[in-house]
Amino acid sequence: MDHSVNRRDFLGQFAAAGTALALGTRADAQVTRDVLGAPKAPDGQVLKAGLIGCGGRGRGAMINFLDAGPNLQLTALADLFPDRLEAARQQLKADKGIDVPANRCFTGFDAHQKLIDSGVDIVLNCTPPHFRPMHFAACVEAGKHCFLEKPLGVDAAGVRSVLATSEKASSKGLAVMTGTQLRREQPRMEVRNRVIDGAIEHWQASRDSTPYSLTYLTIAAALTRLAGGETEAALETARKALDYADRSRFRLEQGAAHRVLGQAYAATGNPVEAEAAFRESLGILEAIRSWPELGQTLLAYGQFKLRRDDVEGPALIERARAMFEEIGATGWVDEAQAAIGR
Image 1 (cartoon, one colour):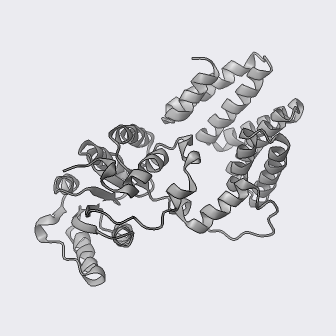
Image 2 (tube, rainbow, N blue to C red; image 1 turned 90 degrees about the horizontal axis):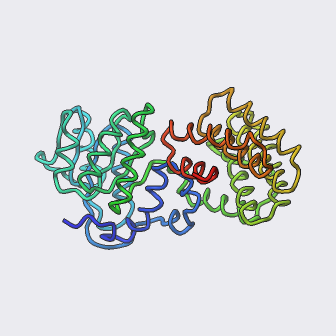
Image 3 (tube, rainbow, N blue to C red; image 1 turned 45 degrees about the vertical axis):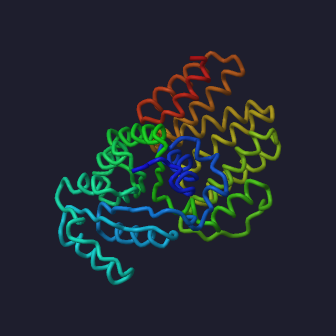
């Protein structure tokens, strides 16, 4: 069986985007509107999926998959508990007229491996997250494309395993998608694009199931403008991001907004304000022990210091690198190493 990503165009489109999302690297910032916005899989040869984890989320995912386009089949089911599997089997019959035969229904702790070996092309991983790293590794080892429901793990060891498996999936050309569905909803993506493009500058009100999203949309716009050399516009946008963060009262996003404000102040030649913003970000993020965001602030602050020939710069960047390495954020490790010339 050919498991290459070119079996179907939509898998090819999602391979880069999906693996980047699973890796948790900055690569997902580069995913295009076309990649994330495809509402349906294009027509093509039949793709067979198997579902691991037949609880409520798994049953929802199997229907979502079947509704995603033509020539998609759900051919195997696996769960630790027979009653959960039977519930999924009955729902498939009632909702889709699909009868998965008994010899393709697997139970027990080895059910995932039996499903993987049953000839499916795609595995929908919807078990409780404790099993996600092990099941994901088995899927990729067998050359299967994967959907991974969030969260991807429950501890540092599990998350590191997922990161390593994601890199292996990328090297094999396998598509890996996660259940971060809000990132792929077209209305939300369109709002994000308009904020980044500058079409939306002044918000009057926002209603969202994720209260912090407005802050991060504005942070993304500020970073985009910084990258494009629009430093004054970036500073104004960063101030808006901090205003939204302060209104939400979420300390995590306040720390992130202060960091971006520091970067914007540095880019506009305001080192005193930049120093204050970076220190405020460090104080907030150290207090709430948010290591990924703290690492990013240490890196940005260190780069700022390095550009000013401050001896504190390399130490800050090294601290960021060690933190990224500890949590398995390989993309950020590479950036930190590049910043200090390793």
